Length: 80
Image 1 (cartoon, rainbow, N blue to C red):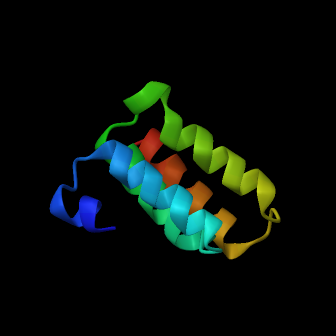
Image 2 (cartoon, one colour):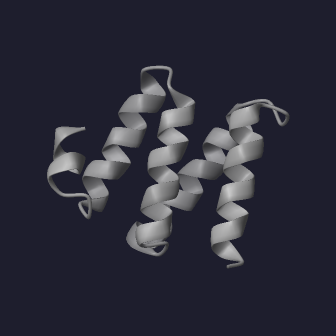
C-alpha cells in the first residue's frame, strides 16, 4: 500500500496491492484498486486490470454487491 501511496501511477504496485487485498479476503478493496488502475491506463500490461476484474467477478456470486457495483463502474469507464 505504501508504494501506491508514494507513487499513485506505479501500475505494477497497484496491481500487486489488489492481489494482496484479494488474498487477504478483501475483494471489494481489490476491485477498487483494479478499477482505479483501469481508469488510469486501461491498456497497461495487455489489459491486466480488466482481466483480473473479470476473474474476481466470476469467482463471486453474480448478485454480490461487489460484482454489481464493480461491473457498473467498469461499464461506465468503458463506455464513457
